[in-house]
Image (cartoon, rainbow, N blue to C red; front, side):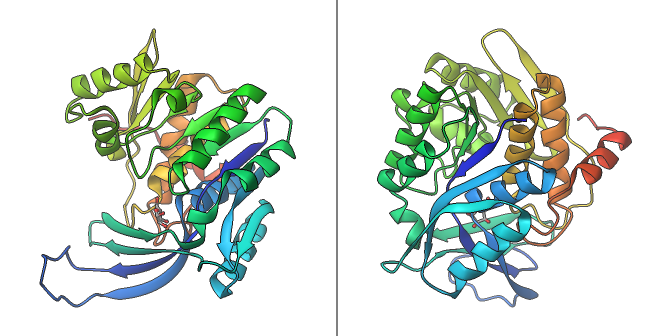
Length: 309
Ligand code: RIB
């Protein structure tokens, strides 16, 4: 199995459970409030470690209680935290999350220390791990840092998996160093400027990304599973039926499942099915990380079968 280096964000999620999303200017009463570890980078690292991957994390925290808490979380999950820097110049990242009764979420991120995860810090920790590996990236640390990390990883022969979230315009020089990109429908539309409301739209937008240099597009479709597109093939892998409590980090869990499968050289059909199952199980508990599955949990769900729409 290839090792996985996750280069990305760590946030503390302040999560409110609401009866429904409210309107501008409206005050409503929440049903619950919890504080969880989160951030797309941290979530992907914890999910991959829980599956049994060998995970090394590179990122930045504040010199505060939240930072100390997060180092414990990652260590307990089994990740190597030697690539985490601490800064006194900003607080650890925070996310304000609203979750409604259906498990849907809305998120505001205040990057704090994540914004100080610079290229010098990341380069040092990439060069310390010269073996071929999976490099997992998202876009919650500075985009220049991500671009340079992808460039070095690609040159090293690593397999680069980019979760383009939050989505912004990305130059082709970045996309050319990406092996797998995993947008949801909204992110795909923002990345390409094309509609992504139907399977045909998604396929066309995915081909546009392939034309710009990405090798494999895996569009995340929520309960509908995912759509895989490369130069030759298009595959739809249906989602799994689960009782959804909270969809926060379902995409991060999916990415961890995909990374684990690629690290273990699964054929693409199996990799997509495995990633769908990891994402689905993660929605069955509250908070980003509480329901992230072990291998055993994933196998149980996969034995029950998929549903198609
Ligand atoms: O993908 C979910 C994550 O997005 C949350 O944990 C939050 O911290 C934001 O980064």
